[in-house]
Image (cartoon, rainbow, N blue to C red; front, side):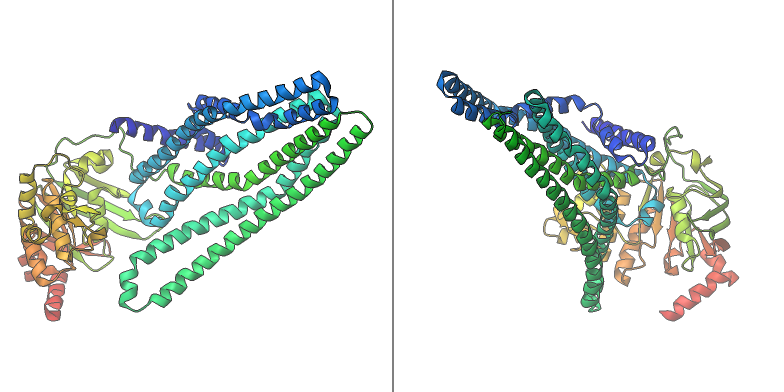
Length: 600
């Protein structure tokens, strides 16, 4: 089942990208690409839609027949009335089953496509590079997954329901009118060019206002998410009023852009309604004059007036669809910004690792972030043997985090080579490589679920014995025993019901249970108190035994046991060696250690 869903995700993503690249900004063609292979279901839905709407489509003709029968009188008149009523009742009797079948086919396709789009977006977000995610606000991405896909779903419903209704009404009404009186038909047809002129006048303005409003909504979503995350800081510094004003200005700007969009859309609707009502008044006078001169029957006046009302209403509905179509097609473009993005990690065809020893070699590695000419790492060279513990220290901005990101594979060198077990990182399937590493970040990331779920995250059928071994190794046992439901205690959002030390130990247990070959510790104890630091340091000592370990630390006391300490400065290695060697040389590390000792 999961493989089939994954295949569907990939198919949806590939189909969208294909159509997006082929048709560029033609969002209509891209939208049609979403439903490729399912058009037959829409045809079936359209057939039942026609059946269910037959009572309303033929009502004006049946009413005209009844009126003409009443005026004519006699047996023929009575027969005309009875037949018209019988036909109407028959059409009403099949309305409900036809309505159910129409909605069954239509809704199934649209909802599956809606879910497929969101799944494709989620899949793509998992493939996009870390620099992409750091450069795009999460609120904007959330807006694309929720709001833009919803707009596409609304657009699809409008296209395959309202648009279908409009076309059916126009085709049938104009066809009947053509059979009865072609002079009246020419009067009806004049509505089309007038509607086209109105659309052309307003279309570009509506499209521009829709884009501005969509972008402003994305910005609002990003700001609101940021505000929610900042609530503890805001409350702690009594900045509630400042934050309210900051968000209020954003909301006012969003409301202003929404107001401009609403006004242009309402003016558009009012102009089209007024023009069409004038046409309808002319039609009433024209058909009335034809009845007065005996060119048509009296009942036909009601038919033509009703028919012209139908034609006018359908063109009005078509014009009123324009804002919805514009909004939906803008959302198609917005989704395309993610799905067609090329900033992805490419693993296809690369060597998959079956095992990892844990030796690393940096050869004259250079790295600079996208859109920046400043090199974060400059001719960085370092050999690491399997099982070694390497600690990186240095001032902020010296390149420590960049080195870790290169080791994880979040980034690859702009120049030079990073070899893992003798293989260039650019030739390795990074997904297979990361199965052998574990990362313990400075701020542990926990999700809403049980403590057990957070420890075994991504693993299946893990025995309780293995979980408890990881708990004990992470010095987490005393914490678990105090929790109300032990390992089954629910963790609140971001671990809000746990202390910093408890969250960190859960993260360490998550790393231990995977039995990794390589450990990466990114300032894992920097934000903890002395007692928690001692407990976690003991857990880390257990974790790194026999494994290649990379540590970034600001507290130099935590790296004394490292095999080598590498001091970074402006992207270069200033000095390296064991703790005793560096203290004896009295270089940069010695000065840093003395300064920290003086500050304690």
